[in-house]
Length: 339
Image 1 (cartoon, one colour):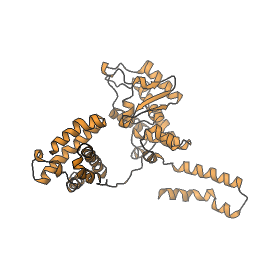
Image 2: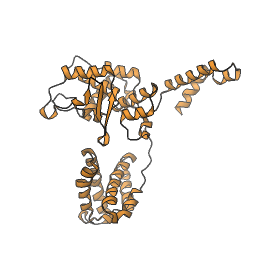
Image 3: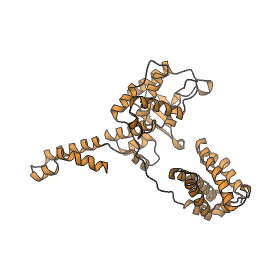
Image 4: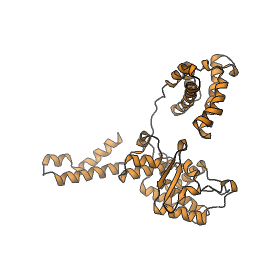
């Protein structure tokens, strides 16, 4: 079977019709095969048009992945993303062409490469207030930006999800918002009263006149078009630069930092992990665990409450006092957290 025939079936039939993948996913997979096909043809010393499905062996794929890292200087994360696109093709082969099931299973058995997991930075409550205060409400787009920043923090939504919000997703009466997330999954969340008031006022007085194609979108830019994900990223970066020192900006993602801050805020307020998962729109709880990092101050506050409880509930014991001497343990705790 020709590889070109298989790829045509993959991009025209399988991804959009059977799986219902978004255009973003399809374009990402397309870029992978733009790189893979010339490499495979050179690896086999044949023309691209002569490539067959049987040529797509595990050895070729591993050589391609190594080429990405060594020659194109791609990171392990990019390598893994390319492998996901190749494995998706293998799943289609296993499903539609069972005679090639053995080849598909071998491709699916290729492991992803482990890589260091970066700690996603988040904003402290006082920093979030500084960002809000950095907005100039006298400017034409000031109130829109002020409303958008509040919504980013309250909802914990991704920038792409905020960009695709429609007017009818917002229910002012019930104070809820519907969000279309990854894999075309909708979720409904409740909003704080202040956020609802800001959105209502923005729609009534400050929302710009949209072009006919974008009349249904909630957030509109200066050109009357929908505010894009990159536009929201630039907007957040602009206000973070105004409010925070440059060194602080190195450890946080401009738009995603609000999402992470909301997760930490919910954790500190005692919300269950499943509540955080549902609000962020994660498919499995393992993705949510990335966000569950408490800062040192929160850890100390929790431990202090436990010590106060222990001292009130237990009889006086000099050995116990020595173990829970809070004043002498703060520096040690800080050191332990820095390891």
